[in-house]
Image (tube, rainbow, N blue to C red; front, side):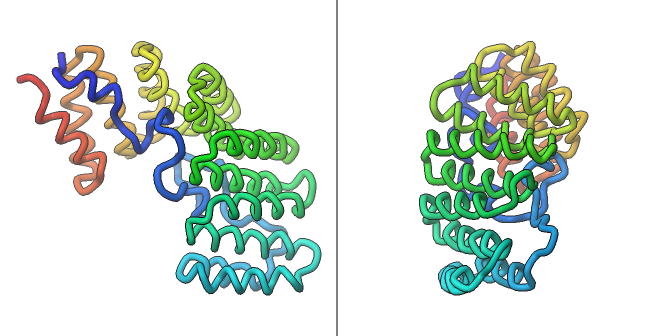
Amino acid sequence: MLALAPLLMMAQVGVDPTGGAIPGIPDELRNRPPREQRSAIKSIEKDKPSARLEPCLKQASNDPKSALETAKDWRRIARNSERAQAAECQGMALVGLERFGEAQDVFASARAEAPEGSVDRARLGAMAANAALAGGDAKAALAQAGTALADAKAADDNPMAAGIELDRARALVSLKQPEQAAEALASARTLDPKNGEAWLLSATLSRRMNDLAQAQTQIEQAAILSPRDPSVGLEAGVIAALAGRDENARKSFQSVITLAPDSEQAKQAQGYLDQLKP
């Protein structure tokens, strides 16, 4: 059995929903295409995107201060659906400046201006929730995510709804409501059974709640869906170590190092390997 069991119980800040808001700027706020294991918060999907949107978002990524002024000027003259797009760019610029409270408000305004029943309405609401999470306001994040979840269901987009349930789970854990977070994760798995991140976060939360049997079942499913995700291998090793299966833990930790040698997960895995009893 590991001598570092107490440390392992607190392990994996990067994937641990009990860690509160997503470290740094959440992926959803970077406006990147969805990762393979998470199709929830989608990239730009507008029916008729303005020609101004893409360059504005690029500017927000490279020079957020200038982009903020660009977006404000655009929003003053924008009409109809362009108002939501201009607000989205303004929100992204605010995220780049780490003004998360303001970004939350702008994304919420953009959501209100998007067509009812549209995927964009749900996506922008989810971005408001993630801005709140990034700013450490879990209560606001939970409220924004609840609104976004209703929008995603109205748009009949189950994968997006599943991703928003993950955001709800993060907020609930930050609010020290792990049982409700587990319910949100269960809903995410039902909405999108192929969402590897939902299974990974479920395994992590189950492990933190001392249900190692359920955590093992969930991490096995995560490994099937996301076999090359080093976070999955790291969590599998932590679960195995806590269950007293040291050899399995070693194999999992070594697989992380082999798969992604330069990653933060590999550094953690090596640290655990160094502390395993021979």
